[in-house]
Amino acid sequence: MIPVNVKQTVAVFLAILSPCVAVAEVVRDTLCMTDTGQIDGIGPAYCGGEAVLGERFDVQAAADFVMDHEVLITSVTGDYFTFLGLPPDAVNVFFYPLEDQCLADNNVFWQAVVDPGDLHLEDIPNDFGFVGLRIAADLPEPCLLPPGHWFVCIQPVSPDFGQQIAALMPDCVEQLCDANARDGGDRNTLCEGRGAYNYQDWRCCELFERSTLAFRVVGLAMGGCNENEKIKARCKGHGDTRRVIVKVRRATAGETLTAELDAPTGITQPIEIDDRGRGKARFPDVPPGTHTATVCGKTVDVTCGE
Image 1 (cartoon, rainbow, N blue to C red):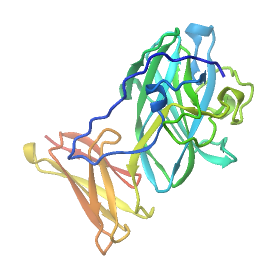
Image 2 (cartoon, rainbow, N blue to C red):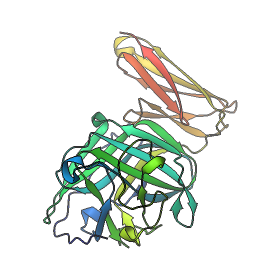
Image 3 (tube, rainbow, N blue to C red):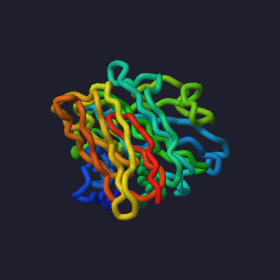
C-alpha cells in the first residue's frame, strides 16, 4: 500500500432527482471515505499511462457489494488520484460474481465501455501532489444483476495514470471483503497493456490488504421480475400530447415492476401487474425521435414522430 495523509475533505457528491421520478437505489456507496478524509492508501487501477510512464498499462481493482434482490444497475462512480488530471477518454466497467473466500470470479459477467459523453467529473482537492478525480459513469445500457455477492471494476482509460483511493477499515461504511486487484492481461478484452501486479487472477493483494475502495453503484430495484416478461411499446399523439406507452405481459400477478425510458438517464414509472400478469406505464411529454423502454432488463425501441 502507498500511504497518503489527507488534510482536506471534499464536498459530498449529490444527485438531485425530481420528486416526480422514481429514485434510484444506491446499492453500495463508500465515497464517504474520500469525503471525510479516511484515505490510507492508493493502488494502480487504470488502462493507460503513456503520458506519465512512457508505456501503456492494464491494471484492475475490484470492490464488492451484496444485494438481496434483483437490481438494474445504471451508473457507477469511483475516486482516483491521477498524475495529470486528464479527463478519461472512456471508462471500462466490469461486474464479476463472487467466486470463493472474498475473491472475484476471473470470468467477467458483464462489461461495457462508457464514452466521454456519459462521464461526469468532480475534482478531489488534496495537498500531496496528486490530481484527484471523482469519475461517475452512466452505463450505455443498464446491467441486470441477480441477487448475490458481486464485485465491480471501474477502469478509466487515459494516457494519464491513476490509482483508486482506498481506506483501511473506514468507520463510515460496513467493511465487506478486501479489495481485489490483478493485471488485465488476456482476461481483459477492453484494454491492452503491460501489467504491474504480476498476476492475472484476482487476489486480495498486499496493496489493498484490509482495504475498501472508494466507489458507488446505483440502480433500480427489479423485485418481482420472473424472466418470462414480454414487453412492447408504442408512441401515441403529437406535440404536447405525445407519449410512450409501455405494456408488459407474462409478469407475476400482484407485483409492481419498474419501466424506464432512455436508460440510464431517463425517467421511470411503476407498472402495477394485474391478476392476468399484465400492466402498462405511460411516459408523457416525450420528444420526437427513437426511445428505448426497459423493463426487467429487457429493452424495446419505439420511434415518435413530430
